Image 1: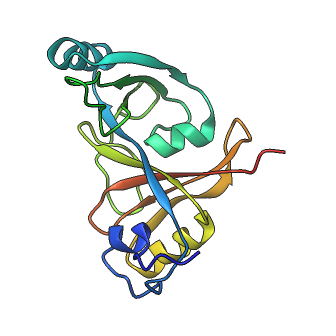
Image 2 (image 1 turned 60 degrees about the vertical axis):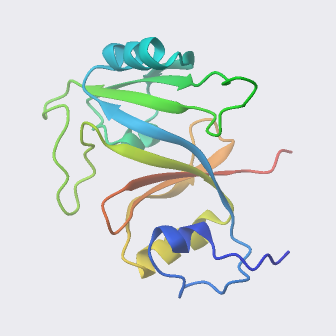
Length: 182
């Protein structure tokens, strides 16, 4: 099906040249991820100040997921998922977001990002996208000034393929392509 829209990946990386305007590549915003120094304080801030509600979270244990958020293998990563409540009969436009704390390990908990470094930065926002054709998006990203942090590989659940990129401006993007159900 052709839509005439430029693929989101091309827009994110500043160039539509890699795809024709009738591309059938698709992506939806899954959730932003905030990298923070103190998970409990950050969750309390959003719950107390904005009336958000906590919907889940816990320790991030899968190596691929830890790499995606910028944690080293010997570091601990904890997450919380929160979402806004409806405002006067208006549903939130964004379903929610994740807050992640990275600590421990031999290295400092958060390392400043330099070329080739996968470390996260406190205050960093990560775009999390649900996509179709993840391999094509990775190819487009590389052709348009992005860099690949994690090549596409199966997620720990086996229900999706996950990859992560950094756009030319330094924004980390995690992507999931859900696999067809049997």
